[in-house]
Length: 374
Ligand SMILES: *Cc1c(COP(=O)(O)O)cnc(C)c1O
Image 1 (cartoon, rainbow, N blue to C red):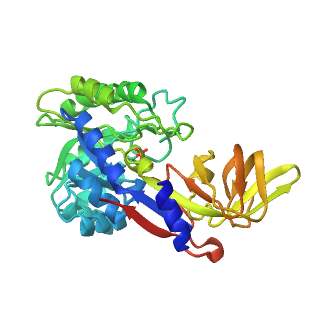
Image 2: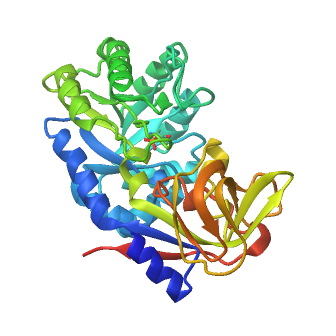
Image 3: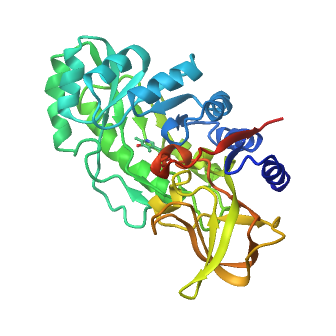
């Protein structure tokens, strides 16, 4: 990575996203191996839908979860053979019409959405998305709000399904929170199954019921070396499975986050009101992750600067080129030295990074994209 960043700097290709496809392949192969005895693994495309990322992940996953018509069409183009599950709130009639043709599973978010799906008169295999209350304290992101149906509201689906025999109820979907470690994820998976098994039984879905347990496997930005314990999750989740039933998960962040770097260069180093700032080329319009999650993006400084201002043995705040105090990558981080011309490589930029960023704000140039692959 260090050599590659140096080359990019010499080429003048900064800021750049560098995706290490070799590392990604190895990582997702490891996840696959840990889940050898189930559950099925779908990749949530919204974490990073880059075509080469998708193609690298594809051989190791059972399918791709898409959350819009745009994602569906994109993934279908990149991976014509992939099994697709379509989820997400606010599906339009056009999206539902696309989904019944292209997705093998549709995750339904409300009774009204189910009724609109029924109106299409087209066969479809549906999972009903439930939103269990539960205690989600300590999670990175609880999916409270308009996602899925309360256990009471979901009852309204019986009648709609009964009147639309072309819709096949295949199971239950739940994606309740993000940022759960293996233990918390196992507890949550057990909670979902405990609710969903008798509910599906009562609903008459007794043949090969499916349980999509969602994504949200923890990623720790304060410790780039730590990893979700896939081996433990795989071992324990297999013991929650019942014969003839399918369990499925759909992680995104924990699959691709480690494979991406945002590499840029120091434009200025200065002190303001007693605080050191390094101003970098680019900004959170390329890498919005630290602004949206309000964290310090982990980074390494690769010394290249020979002249110009620098800070030594200081706490430095790394900012971008946007005219807003929110354009911050990391706050008051101790560094040995940072100088104008140095290259800064932010790690953990492979998920919810470029594709969630507001690219056109201030009309700076777009980053370049590079792929490491043997
Ligand atoms: C975002 C999302 C995922 C993936 O979540 P991660 O935190 O990236 O693992 C999975 N399922 C649904 C329904 C989602 O909205």
